[in-house]
Each structure stands twice: as structure tokens, then as C-alpha cells.
Length: 319
Ligand code: ASP
Image (cartoon, rainbow, N blue to C red; front, side, top):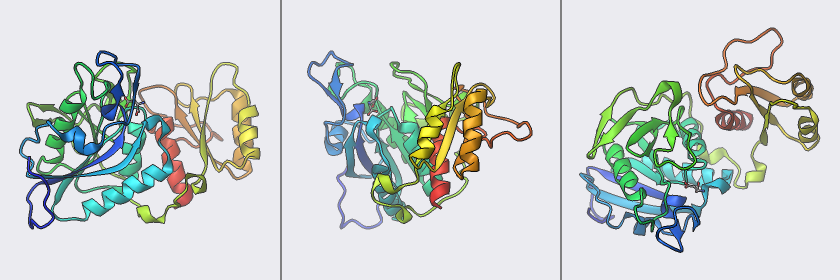
């Protein structure tokens, strides 16, 4: 690995690595403790030490945030999207790697997918064990992510974990503990990283649209407010009514099965829609999509999970 030198022109394969925190940068008080650790403790430059960079010519690091991704918010998304846009426009940059917590990785991936629609690879990676675990998974994930980011022709927002490459539209955290914690549902992964080489099994993710990162407000409170409510046995409308009174602009319902909603909750959602709140139905099932609609049904978000539909609606409300 060669340190980045700003005076060197025409670097062929420069990878920018942006740090945001997460377990990959976490530290446990005892090396054997994979659970009782603090996320987001180790800086991105230090995380890269000792990680072989394969065939990457140069690496530039930046610490964009240092948080547990359970606390992700719109201000970090804004900063991250703007740094990505900056580096993507640099001809000497082949791709970007982002280290991130696993908890909201799929949300950040979808946000960047919907806003940047990059023609270069933007690869999020993570870890399920802290950096000082007896057998950490972060270094291998980071190495695999760099291999994908430096693969000729790679494009779009991707996630790499446990040797599997997922596309931003499909990736979801599907396991709370396993190192191979992500899945791509029916779509399946984009490919696999094997001994530093990508074995691609389907096409790169296609982004539907892009909007300029700099249009967004700096403070998260100024972003469009979209909340998620869940349909379940015994669901009612009180939560929706309280959110409407509180000024919510959009509501995503994590509905049962193929987008069916408890009648009491559905009535409240129709009232919210009549009052000018945008409402979208999604499925709380891990796989599949919402298809078709009975006459008068609330609009649905097709294949988007509740958290991704929330991002889509938020961006539409701010467009
Ligand atoms: N809470 C951590 C985070 O999302 C979990 C992880 O990274 O695995 O930052």
C-alpha cells in the first residue's frame, strides 16, 4: 500500500476510504468479548493499518463521522453524500469504500443509491465483531471491499460483508449475530469476493434517479419528517393520529403480508392521507414485494422495505 501523495498526478487506482464508525471501529474492554464493546472508537487511518490493499495503488482516508450507526441521522447522511459526490467527481478516484455500522448500513446504502446514482463503485463495509476481538471480521471485510472498489467496471452503491457483495436496493441486515449478517432476498447477491477477486453473478444496481446532495438542510430536524408505523394484531389508529397532530409529513406502514393493514390502522391512515400526509404501504415480511392493490387501497412502495421506503418518501417530499 502506498500512502496518498497529493502531488502525484494521474494515480491509476486511487481508493478513498471514508470512516463513519460502527462495530468495525469498536473496542471491547476484553479481547474475547464480542458483545460488550463500544462502537466507533478507532480512527479510519488506524483501521487500515495492517489491511493488505491488494492491487490498489493509493489510498486516501477521511473520517466523516465516528458513531454507532444505530444513531445515524440525516446530518451524517448529508455530510457523507457530499464527500462521496466530491470524490466521485475526481478523475483520479476509482472508487470509494465506506466503513459503517451494520445496524443502519442498508439505509445509508439506499440513501446514497437514491441520491448519488454513482457510475463508480461506492462500497459500504462493516463488521459484526469489534476491532480488538480475538478473531475480528473487519479487516477481511475491509480488504474485500477494497477489492470490489478497485474492480474494473464496478459501479453503483454496494455492500460487502463476509465475502458477499450486495446491491443497495436489495441489501438487508438479516441476522443479529452471525458474521454473514446480510441478505439480498429474492434478488440474490451481486457476487462474491474470493481470494481478492470478484466473482460477479448479476448486474450492478441500477439507480432510479439522482438529486444533488447540497440542496438538503444541515439540521436533521429541517428534513421532511417521515415515520414508520407497524400493522399487527390489535393495531389501532392512535399512533397515527398523534403523529398527524405532531406535524408528520409522511407515513410508511410496515404492513402484513402483501401490504394488508389492520382495519383500525388503515382508517387512520386514510384520514391522515386526506389531511395531506403522504402514506406508503410496505410489507413487514423480509422477502417479496407488495403487488397489486384493491380499489381505494393506500399507495404502496413495491419492493422497498419499510426503512428504504421511508428514505424514498423523505427525498420525494424534499425534491
Ligand atoms: N451498533 C453497531 C452499529 O451499527 C452494530 C454494528 O456495527 O455491527 O454501529
